[in-house]
Image (cartoon, rainbow, N blue to C red; front, side, top):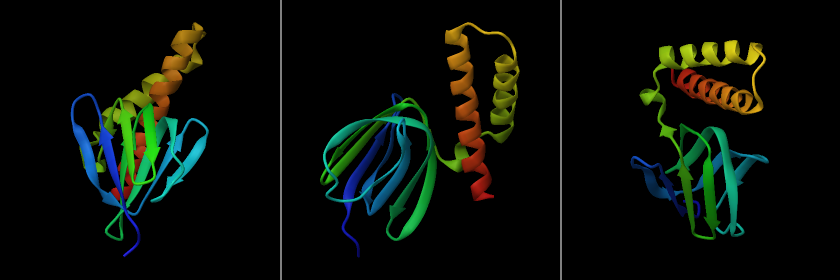
Length: 135
C-alpha cells in the first residue's frame, strides 16, 4: 500500500471528510495541485472546482468552493465554504444557477457584481461536471 497522509475537509456546517488517503488533487487559485505524503508545508488558496481523492486505491470525487488549504508532511486540512459529494448535487438547481449567472454576465455590471456572477457560474459548472461524472 502507498504512503498515506490524513486529509480533512471542513465547511462551516460540517466535517465533510476525514480519512487517511494516498493522494488528493484539487484546484487552487494558481492551478491544479496534487498532494502526497511528505509534501512541502504550505498554505494555499483553494479555487472552485472538483477534488479527486485516492483512498484505499479508489478514486472518489467531490466539488469544493473557495477556501484555504494547509499542507503539512503528514496532514492536510482544507477549510472551504462548501463541499458536496456528487449525489448531494441538485443538477436542476445547478443548471438554473448556471443560466442565471450567464444572463447576469451578459449585462453591464458593477465590478463587484461581475465577480460574484463569475464565481456563481464557476460553482454551477463545477457542480455539473462532478454530478455528470457519476452518471
